[in-house]
Structure formats: C-alpha cells, structure tokens
Amino acid sequence: MRAGWMSVLFVMAGLSASALARADDPPKSCDVPVYLLTSDSPLPRVSAAIKAGGPLDILVVGSRSSTIAGAEGEAYPARLQAMLREKLPGIAVSVSMELAPRKTAADVASGLGKLAQAKKPTLVVWQTGTVDAIRSVDVDSFHDALDQGVTALQNAGADVVLMNMQYSPRTETMVSPTSYIDNMRVVAQQHDVPLFDRFAIMNRWNETGEFDLFSAVRGVGLAKRVHDCLGRALSAFVIDAAHVNPAELGTRRR
Image 1: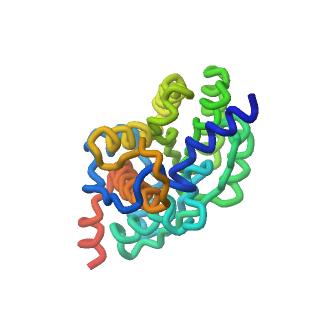
Image 2: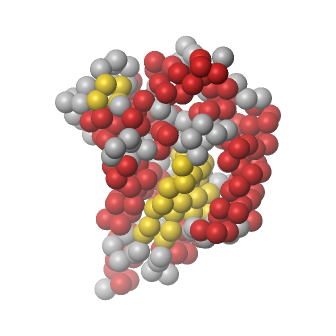
Image 3: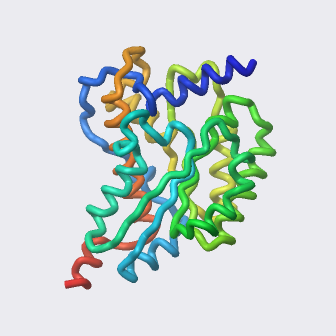
C-alpha cells in the first residue's frame, strides 16, 4: 500500500520534476478565465503593505509540486516573486518557500502558527491536499486540519491564500480529489480567505490544448512553462484580492 501511494505521489508531482509533455511544444498563452483569478475574499494585510510602499513578504508552504528539481528558480514561487516585482515597481517583494514533502494537511497545520510567528510573512500561500487525497485521509479530518492551520496563520497576523492540488489527467483513475477540493473551498469561505484553484486552472489548460498534460513524454521544459504561467496567474490573483491598482500606485509615487 505504501509503495502504491508513493508511486502515485511521484506521478502527481511529475510536473515539478519532469513534466508530462514535450519540452519543445510551447504554450499558446497563459490565459486564465477572469473568474478563476478573482475572489470575494480580501487580503487586507497585503493591501496595506503595498499601499504603504512595502515590504511585501510572502511565504509559500507547499509540497514537491511547488518546486522543479534542478530549476527551483523557475518554479512558481520564484515566478510569483518576479511577476509581483514587475507589477509593483518600488515595492520590496520577497517570496520564500517552506517545503513539506509527503506531509498531510494535519502534519503541516500543527506547525503553521509557530512558522508564521518566526518568519512574520504578510501572506502565506498554503498549497495542500495532494497527499491527503493520495492517502484517502478522512475528509472531515482534512477539513479540521485546514481549519486549524488557517486559524493559526490568521492569529499569527498573516493573510492566507489556500491553493489546491495540481491537475493531472494521468492520475484521475487512481486518485479522487473532488471531496478534498470541495472541503478546501468550504474552509476558505468559512475563514473568508481566497482560494487559488490551481486544479481548475490546469484542467482548463489541458482541455484547451494550452499544455498537453497527458503525454507520457517527459521533459523539464513543460514544467518550467507551467510554473511560469502559474506564477503569472497567482500574481494577478493576489493583486486582485488585495484590491490595489498598480497603475494608481505608480501615479502616487510620482
């Protein structure tokens, strides 16, 4: 059983280590529907930090799918930092990564409060759900772990964005993520925090032919392009949820 879910985890994280498509097949664009880049839940601390001129410190807590083996500088946390710096000139933006490989939401949640107190980030992006889905963790327990973790982060003074698992058509018959995705949405609504729907975004890219996520041909090139697009999408999502207009900020500084 352990060997089985470990092999599935490797496949689910395939885009972080060796992407599941041809490296020489460039994407058409990074287009994402507006409804997937907006949220009714605000990021007040991010907004205040940007309007005050910074700094804006972001901590990404994630699994292996938040990295690219041998090319960490091109994974979505690094691309998020680059895009926010480009969109928010004059703001000191720093994105750091806390890797929690093979850990469930409950494993991570217990230490999130102390982690936020130590690092004092303005925003924590908590990417979770993959390992829980693979291990078939009880969904109520998953919900409780999310609730515990988000509460701890908010009590530590950080804004929170929840990010669900990545989409992979090759694992749909092995892992059923729906109940975990639904519970993440419920917890996000309960705590009034934005949910970045990575699963839906990647699913759309696969359906529209933006990326071929089903191909068995492996290459790190696709991983870099997917992560670049995710970083771009996440930067737009954060700015929208913070309710700031970068153009207006630039005008004020002049």
